Length: 120
Ligand code: SF4
Image 1 (cartoon, rainbow, N blue to C red):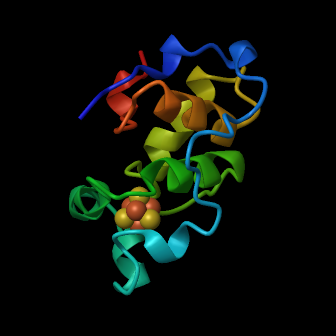
Image 2 (image 1 turned 30 degrees about the horizontal axis):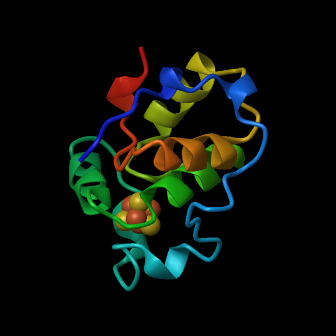
C-alpha cells in the first residue's frame, strides 16, 4: 500500500490523464459496495467509519473519489471519504479543476490509497 500526498502533485502539472494507466470509466459496478445496500453509504456519525471501511482496498476507489469530487457530490461516503472530508479537500485544493486527471496521475505515480489524512 502506497500513500502519495495529494499535495505532491501540483494541479498545474497534470495536463491530461495518463493513457497508459487503467482508469475505469464504468466504475460503480466494480466497487466493493456493488450489490450492497446503497443506504449503508449514506449514514452519519460513527456509522460513517463502517461505511469508509467498505472502501478500503476497493479497486475503483480513485475513480469513485474523483467522481464525487468533480461532481461536488454533497452526501454520502464515496471513495473512502465522508462529505465533510471531501469538502475539506476541495477547500484545501481550489487549484484542482480535474480530480479524475489528478488521481489518475497519482495512481500512475504508485498511489494505491487516497487518504484525506494526506491533506495538510
Ligand atoms: S470506493 Fe467505496 S463507495 Fe466507492 S465504489 Fe468502492 S466501496 Fe463503493
